Image (cartoon, rainbow, N blue to C red; front, side):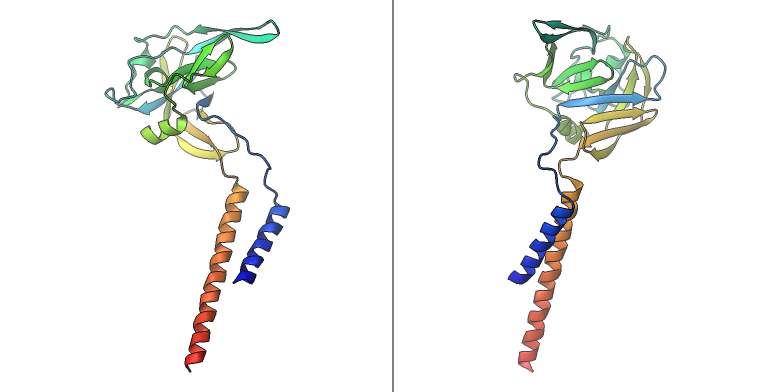
Length: 235
């Protein structure tokens, strides 16, 4: 059996030399989600993630904080500083009042929401706060990530929203894709994609599958040879 395992090890070494895995992996924080959109209705200022959440859900709150737009970036004592302005969106805005068959705004109604910030595109963050130093994690808030949101509430939708909080349109339910890129929710017209960072490189997955298959074949071969040997001894 040892010689069979040695063959598998040799195969793994050859595979890794031909298709080397990265020595270090990218690491993106699942508490930060990029919001991207195209083919959007006219006057769209940002997109907001919608989840199917009941008002009696333990995570539901009546209103969190409005989206913030970068108004100014400046240098102070050699350090980049930011000035944000809140959009005129409140409790009575259409996006805050939206309840489309149970679908509500994640950023405005989940207790861990740290708001949406709008620059060239937009970023939604959980467990975070926004000040002149930019977006940063808030350790005082119970940890939450887009993973736990996805696990708790399933697939997403997105609303196209203007600067006054009017809902201009709603996408279909999201489909998930894996990629070596940051976490993102990407709207394209009616279509919505939830992009998840691929923790396990695809080449490593292939390697594991092939190695497991090779070991299984060798094990079966060993068992068959043993059975044949026993049969010959009994004759």
